[in-house]
Image 1 (tube, rainbow, N blue to C red):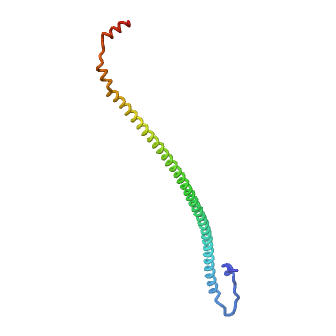
Image 2 (tube, rainbow, N blue to C red):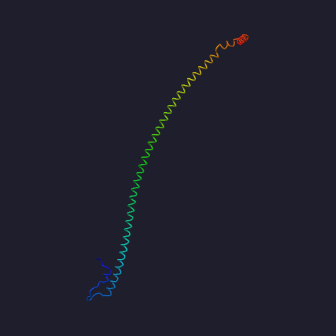
Amino acid sequence: MPLTPLDIHKKEFGRSFRGYDEDEVNDFLNQIIKDYELIIREKKELETKLAGQTERLSYFSNIEETLSKSIVIAQETSEDVKRNALKESKLLIREAEKNADRIVEESLSKARRIAVEIEELKKQSKVFRTRFKMLMEAQLDLLNNDDWDKLLDFEVDTDEIEQLSDDER
């Protein structure tokens, strides 16, 4: 067990012949007591300071551990977000490709229908042109016919018409 300043103060030495000077020894012991008390006070202050620093270190160690866990969670969350975004983008791309295929297919189908309609209109146009040409040729034949000349040469007897007209009345 360590000595205390009080132990030093109470210490009594036996007397001997040719011993040390008692006042000198007491002065020296008093100086030792003062120094020893100072060292004990400093030791207590350092122990208090060390306890505070240990507590602070523990606090910062807890913060460090919490931050490390938070970083790990943030990294995992980041990876989850990346994976989900990648899945969603792939899904959107597939959907867009399907829509593009559908639009292309509809466009091709529409183009085929229009091409068929164009061919049908061409045929109808040829038929109409042929019929119209035949009609025009028939009309020209009628105009070029000699019957017109005969009609112009035909003379009507107006006396006869008047007489027929009187008979009918």
